[in-house]
Length: 427
Image (cartoon, rainbow, N blue to C red; front, side):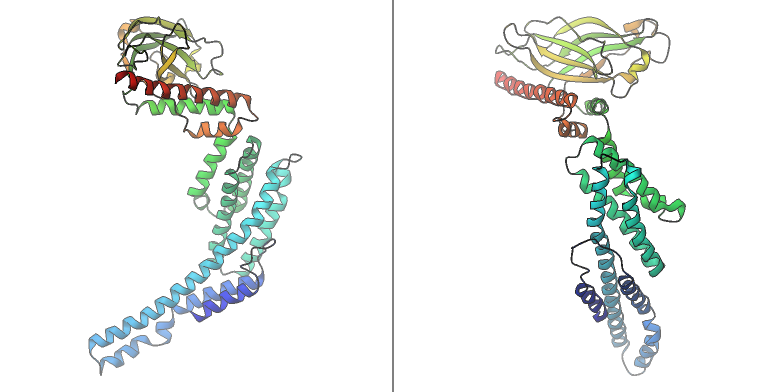
């Protein structure tokens, strides 16, 4: 244990624990790590070298077995404490190597992603050279088992640097560059099978970073599509507190039209002071950028009821492949008709168009009569999805993101106000 403290103090005296300037691995540092590893290995041979068994056998000639066992336990406790201390000291050194390198790595990475004059391939040489120089020193000087551990920590240091950068408000192009750089450094550490294994490289930290970069590198249109995918998924867990809608739907491949039959709604919010509503349902195919020519349609409004019967059918001209696009959604928005003020929203339902009957065959025999009725709960549009969070960060420089997020927040805010108003009318 004294040796471990001696190594620690020597490293401290030489500035190893001072976070100042670029960090580079030295031969002296490697020697200290090797020596620590050698001491740890030697401790495994101590019982044999010190003849523990012979000593205990001699004790049994004059001492009780209970005392012999106590002595044996004491000796092994001392040895285990020494091993644990040396392992901790070696771990501390290895962890601090990663910590010291992180600051230098972060500087290199930041220069690469903010360089608007060069591509990632053209500007990553300094970073790779820094990593390679340190790895060369380590591989030529360290014991193999120590090198493997420190190589893994260096890879994690790179991932942590990139992860730290993603927490800043970067632009989309910066995330794209990080995404490119991650693959380059991944290949570098893999070394065509001579470095870390693919399994070691693709740990939880790498998976989380990859997802984050993929999300933030996506176009705003892709993020909007993902938002509707999330809404359709959340629709499955919606409750009936805002009411329900009932409808039938199928795709007619002969006419290339989406056919929707709105049956009714039930137990919707009372949004008039009378405790009733004048409801209608607006149908829209979303997201708009996928269906720019498809106009929203709506039912006639029903007077003073919370259980409106609509019995109206609608057709939307849509090419069949478009229904299978990511995020393609049929949205049912319930409104309360008002002659003076703006109509009040009472909730929305989201139907994933990839599940529309008739998409994969010529026609639906019997039309609406042969397709099942679908009941869907009305929900509150979410603002907590990761796609929305990314678009919020883009609002200043991206008008499409700004319009979508602003409209979403306004709609959600009005719906929450209407829910509170409905509670007051019920009381």
